[in-house]
Amino acid sequence: MNQAQAIFFAFQIWCSIGAIIAFIFLTIGIDRIDEDAQGAYVFRILLVPAILLIWPLVLWRWFILETKQDAWPNRHAPPRHAHYWIAIIFAIAIPGVIILGLSIRQTWPVDFEPQKLSLLQEQNQ
Image (cartoon, rainbow, N blue to C red; front, side, top):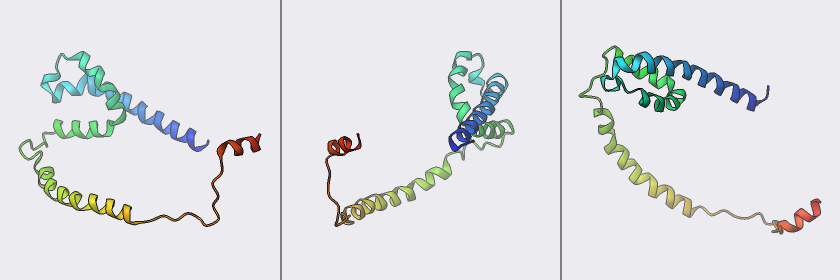
């Protein structure tokens, strides 16, 4: 089995598990954690591709909501607190990367000669 086959096999397993999770979650779980989704059966079909790919997050979120561990008022407090510092870091890092990229010069090899591609193609035939 080469690498491409191994990756494809792993993707098939991932999506198979995702399909099982999607079926269980969309038939049983979504009604238990979201009362607005009750009776919205056409909407559930739209969720299938996303659940196939991010099924571990769906399971984790389903567990958190099912066990009532979700602290709704504090839900967005940690990310909002971090936004200030991340904005400052980005404001410094982005111009720094641009200036660094413009200041570094690349040199060509001394013995490099440009060649026309059409001549190379004729020589290979």
